[in-house]
Image 1 (tube, rainbow, N blue to C red):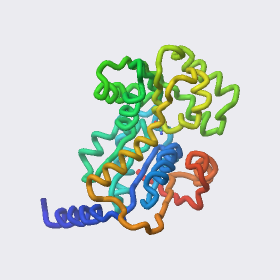
Image 2: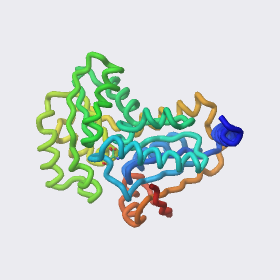
Image 3: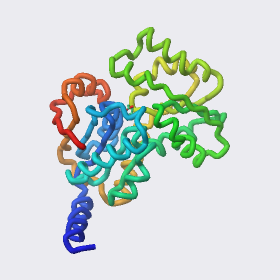
Length: 282
Ligand code: DGL
């Protein structure tokens, strides 16, 4: 390693070792704000930089190579902003890119699939677990591997539900059309599972309709809560927690027009967003 590289690596480690640095969070778009909401609740002293790749959403139907490339670009950007850890709030990006990011970046990187799988393994009584997500997440097999690692006897049923994403973006959370689509995708799961992993950032907003469709006794697992808990544990273990109770700073960045981010984002975040910066990557 040449001297310049060593120096920049040293500066990198120094800035990460600083607990007052922000946490970086990214998603293909707005959906990852459900994870930010939970981070704000569980880690109220931590500053956050959120990057939503609204110019290139959706990631769900894209190839693993493309999703890895986008995820690498965003993680590099967040690292250059001095974040102390990165939370990959997007299930599809976690499914395709988490191992690569962990290999290439000298930062703690937390995904959403391991925490969600752990919660599902804990919640099930019968061992019959359903997982729903985008085409990319489901075809990667990442949830099946992660759940089997937690509970080898689990009987896992997976379904891709791609139309849920545009329905949520449109704000159609409880319309007849949404109920019809939910029935088409999930009608067959009623009675077959006792736990369902909502393996996509957008699906927690459809909890009510999904619950009605699969049966109210089915436990719905929203990985945002568990991911925030894992982030807290990681920061604690690495001595990277924000020590004092100073006012946290929140920055929201989108790669395309901020209007949609502002309009729909508040629904995901559960509170108003003051301003959104625009930045194009790639
Ligand atoms: N954020 C994506 C996920 O959680 C859903 C939207 C997309 O397809 O990009 O998988």
